[in-house]
Amino acid sequence: MKVAVFRKEHFNAAHRLYNPNWSDKENDQVFGKCNNPNWHGHNYELVVRLIGNPDPDTGYVYDMKKLSDIIREEVLIRFDHKNLNLDVPEFKNLNPTAENIAIVVYNLLRKRINDDLDLKVTLYETERNFVEYPAG
Ligand code: NI
Image (cartoon, rainbow, N blue to C red; front, side):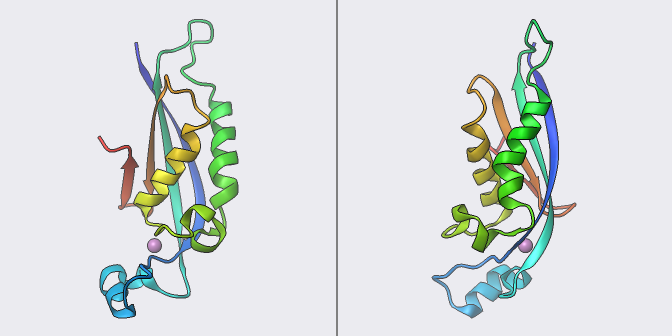
C-alpha cells in the first residue's frame, strides 16, 4: 500500500566549484567554467519524494502543505538568491556541486521528517543534469 508523493520547489543560487588544495590550472582543468572566480548561477529545481502508507484517517502519506513549509524553512530560506560558497555554512569547506547540495538538502530535511517515511532528494542543476540522493 506504499505510495510515493512528490513536492517540487525552485531556487536560484550562485556558486563556484573549486578545490582549494589544487592549483588554478588544476581547478580550471577539472571544473572549467564552473571555477569562475566571480561566480555563476543556476536555476535549481528540487524534487522531494516521500514514500509511506496513506494514513487511514486522512488518506495522506504526508500533509503537502507541511512538506512545503519544511522545504521552505530548511532549504529555500537558506539557499534561494544566495551565494552557496559564502552564505551557506554547510559549503564553507564543501564544494557546492549538485551532488553535495543534494546531500546537504537531504540531511536538512531528514531531521524534520519521521523515519518511517522514505526520503529522496532529486536536484536539477540544469534541465539536462540532475542528481539524486540517496542513489538507487
Ligand atoms: Ni555551476
